[in-house]
Image (cartoon, rainbow, N blue to C red):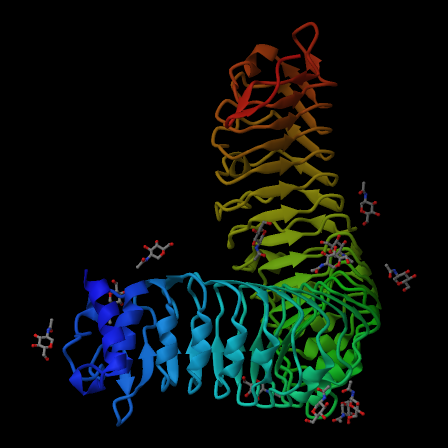
Length: 578
Ligand SMILES: *[C@@H]1O[C@H](CO)[C@@H](O)[C@H](O)[C@H]1NC(C)=O
Ligand SMILES: *[C@@H]1O[C@H](CO)[C@@H](O)[C@H](O)[C@H]1NC(C)=O
Ligand SMILES: *[C@@H]1O[C@H](CO)[C@@H](O)[C@H](O)[C@H]1NC(C)=O
Ligand SMILES: *[C@@H]1O[C@H](CO)[C@@H](O)[C@H](O)[C@H]1NC(C)=O
Ligand SMILES: *[C@@H]1O[C@H](CO)[C@@H](O)[C@H](O)[C@H]1NC(C)=O
Ligand SMILES: *[C@@H]1O[C@H](CO)[C@@H](O)[C@H](O)[C@H]1NC(C)=O
Ligand SMILES: *[C@@H]1O[C@H](CO)[C@@H](O)[C@H](O)[C@H]1NC(C)=O
Ligand SMILES: *[C@@H]1O[C@H](CO)[C@@H](O)[C@H](O)[C@H]1NC(C)=O
Ligand SMILES: *[C@@H]1O[C@H](CO)[C@@H](O)[C@H](O)[C@H]1NC(C)=O
Ligand SMILES: *[C@@H]1O[C@H](CO)[C@@H](O)[C@H](O)[C@H]1NC(C)=O
Ligand SMILES: *[C@@H]1O[C@H](CO)[C@@H](O)[C@H](O)[C@H]1NC(C)=O
Ligand SMILES: *[C@@H]1O[C@H](CO)[C@@H](O)[C@H](O)[C@H]1NC(C)=O
């Protein structure tokens, strides 16, 4: 009823002089509120009997009573934006950000040609961006991010010389970037998380005021623009996960302002440019998973503000430059999966803020510098699959933040520091295939977070400490191929354990009958090739057991089964007895 009335009334006042009642802007707002569901706390004073809407919640007028701003940010609005928006011809600011508005953007919005700021971000808008929005010649902020907009970006939209900030990210926009180099005022262009394809047009280099360019997670490809460095003030360039190819063709050698320069997950070839050393403002530099070759330029040591240096998964060769030790603010140093050779420079121990050190899968050799193990901020040290030698110093056990330490496939010797785990919340420890001697640190699980303990193929001795047997978080325990002895312990507290490998050790004697009966998701146990005297029925209570391999032991039963399958493991089918 009410809606029908307003529809009629709107028609009426457009035919009759407006002195009779509410201004046409007010009528347009009421008409808008037909489709846009305003909560009571806003619509409560949107009163049709007022002469102007200027005192209404969320509405601002100029001196003549024209509506110049409608700000309904985070107001709990649902419904859709109707064509009546086009009647608000004096509107300069429209924000409907962070609501539940659905439907499409009405083409009539293009009539609001005084608009300077348009923010429809964080809604459920779908459909295409109307080409008529190219008429909004005064627009300086266009924010449509986090919606479900699809189709191409209309080329008319990118011809606006006053446009400063464009946020179109997190939609489903496709097609190419319709750049023509006319947006001379552009400072921020955020296009990430769409399905944009084609090249990054050269004309972008005409937007010389550009500071922030986010392109990540699209399908852009081809060469990067040669003249990108014409954009003197560019601070952020992030093109992660696209298909860019070729070498880095530009040079920001003079007055580099870059702070974030990221090309990870592309197909960039060639060498890491030396001019990067002149970008002392850089805080993040990442080229993960490209085809870069050549050496890491020592000039990276000039990047005094760098916090993330991520060069993993390329074809980089040569040594790790000792100059990296000058980058005192480094938090993450990731050089894994390359062809790096030589020793790890002892200067890396100067990185007193380092949290992650990833050097795995290279050809690094020599003693791993012991001083690195006294960097108190270390959380994750992944250096597996190299040719490292040396010992682990006892200071390693004092690191309080250490979670993950994986050294497997190296030539480390000596004992595992006996205090390891006593002061930290270890999660993953993998020392497989080294030459460690001595026992398992008794407090390795005192943080109660240890999930993986992998110590296989070393020369370890003694028994499995009760701290490991009772470790509540443990999922995987592998001690195969060592010289452990004594009885197989009784795992009473092993709810999460799904893999135990005790094989090829000196475990002996009888196995306690219900040794694994609390292990609710034990998928595989491999105690083969010990000197066990097993009574097979002891395992039959363990309903969740998946595989047990008891081969090469001494048994009291006549014919031990090589494998035992039980039926259930957290609902998964395990198989059957063989
Ligand atoms: C609407 O405005 C009229 C006149 O200004 C006033 O009499 C009336 O009470 C208002 N209605 C509401 C619901 O505020
Ligand atoms: C907005 O949408 C979300 C999820 O679709 C829903 O949970 C929420 O209740 C909606 N809020 C309003 C004000 O409609
Ligand atoms: C109005 O109510 C909605 C919920 O219906 C709430 O999200 C919003 O913050 C409120 N606005 C004001 C100005 O109180
Ligand atoms: C850059 O701008 C100049 C002058 O406005 C224009 O002549 C030129 O064509 C533009 N270049 C590109 C690549 O858009
Ligand atoms: C890159 O191109 C390849 C083949 O041309 C395609 O399979 C892949 O999905 C593309 N990746 C991205 C991120 O666009
Ligand atoms: C790149 O810049 C050079 C010199 O400023 C200019 O001659 C050339 O036309 C530009 N190339 C493009 C593709 O804009
Ligand atoms: C770039 O850095 C190098 C090495 O520090 C320096 O010799 C050169 O002058 C710098 N170039 C510019 C243009 O500042
Ligand atoms: C390095 O960071 C500090 C603190 O954020 C800042 O003051 C300084 O300007 C930065 N240096 C460069 C060369 O950008
Ligand atoms: C890059 O990532 C792809 C996909 O994850 C992977 O197959 C490839 O091995 C990686 N390249 C390198 C050099 O690690
Ligand atoms: C990596 O570089 C070496 C030379 O250093 C070269 O022989 C090899 O083909 C390169 N591999 C890839 C995948 O580019
Ligand atoms: C340690 O490893 C676990 C399991 O791989 C992972 O979830 C966690 O994020 C890692 N912690 C750190 C600090 O890298
Ligand atoms: C043990 O590590 C060394 C050094 O990385 C490697 O050469 C060897 O292949 C590894 N052995 C096994 C069985 O993986």
